[in-house]
Length: 131
Image 1 (cartoon, helix red, strand yellow):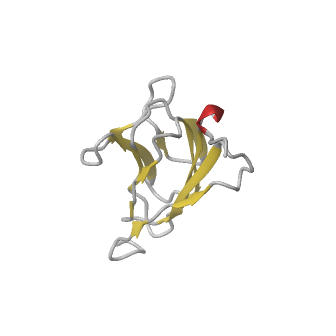
Image 2 (cartoon, rainbow, N blue to C red; image 1 turned 90 degrees about the horizontal axis):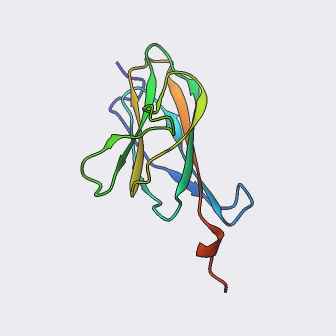
């Protein structure tokens, strides 16, 4: 049984100041426990993205990253080598596809599972307003 029962929908937090660059934003979810579902985030104007997963994965804990353009059906996202983003230990991956919505998914794990997922997003400077 999950340490979070009933399962929790994990909201994201958005920080546009942490990286101290107006062209970047940091989205984070966590700590994620076995059975949790993450809220998707819409940051389509932030085209350059990377994802970091860190924490305690527990037995069989895996983080994958899914994307959707309509927010209805979600599909696995890949890194630039066309390998599905799937983390079973701490690590960082660049995200190849640009989708409207992004959502990390935790499968497996056990009562010790506690994972933080952080996405760094960057947008071109020309999208900044001049005011």
